[in-house]
Image (cartoon, rainbow, N blue to C red; front, side, top):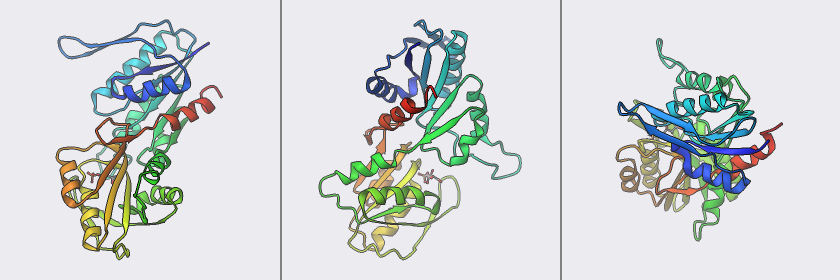
Length: 293
Ligand code: R5P
């Protein structure tokens, strides 16, 4: 029995890195569209009785369909185990019902993925309880230490303070500050709507300080831009913003830069020009430890 990596279209870099680090070959696939735009996928290698790790984001929507088809094909072809690695778990922010009549979207997606999977690994899920939505063993790993190491090793960064843009991200800020060896704190955020957030001017003693703001997701950039502006107003010297999942929707990047951000750092869960931190090594570690236990 061998171990193989199968790359979905959304996560080719992570899949390739995993294959290289673990020495597990990539499975050959054919992925194309029918004339009506429906997806066609086919597994070209013989994978009966093999242990397969399929790597795919559930973002944007079409990648969810691709993942489900890949899993179905793997199951049809008789894979021994199917481990699903989800670098960015899309729909994770609807992790509960905020209003009557809403679905729990993260659970709906998780349940479908659980149908043909043995295990799943998610990188920095928005909330830990999302793992419980899977009907199979689900674990997470975080890219915070990789991000913190990146910034620590950066010439002249000398971060004085790591900040979470809201209380929910405080654990990340604390973890990063431990590695960087500096202080940490959080800002007080209130979300007004999907596009508007309010950051309260909490007194943080940031004058002349070099600050790293760390979050799991940068989407519209609203949260980070508001935080940057408030910190600049309070006299911060330099501001780095970092996230695991850089969605950078619309003019998010312009918003961050015009707010006064000195550098944007993201991982490669979603590929962009800010993907300066690779996440494969933290996944590889889990795969080596957990795949066949
Ligand atoms: C929310 O709880 C998340 O952790 C992020 O803070 C949020 O998704 C960022 O969104 P945006 O960039 O649109 O403000």
